[in-house]
Image (cartoon, helix red, strand yellow):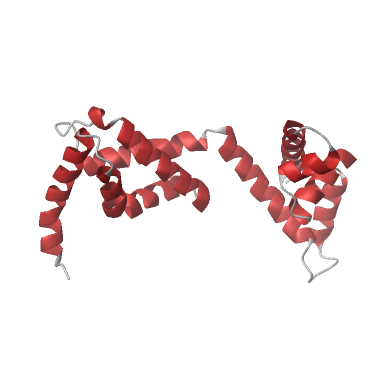
Length: 185
């Protein structure tokens, strides 16, 4: 087992090794970055993006960006870890601005509404009544898609196939339904 002093003294050696591997475009560099810095970078990303799957996706994008932009690293400006942190934080902030992220947040709210509607306890609870009213306010074409997607577990492609409508139409209508529900929450 390594002592803290040994670990600290090895860190510059690992950073130098990673920088050297990056400069040669050696794939081992990405593996070392992930092994030595992955959890720290994931923590930084997770502070901005709480969704675990989306945060993991951002970490993967960070590793690809580091690989592609290895030539941009300048040891005179920042240490390797600082450079990685800056790229990770910026990638997470960029992800929050995307349509994908915003739709995910809307979908989470809708799922919470659906979960309330399906709770076995408190059948006449105020929350459950409100959830039912929200779902009833949706036009039929939206309610059907929401029901198939969230309650019956169909994928968007399966819904499109079953209803014989284009996949893009299904996605657009589900997105519209979620926005509609979100406006009442």
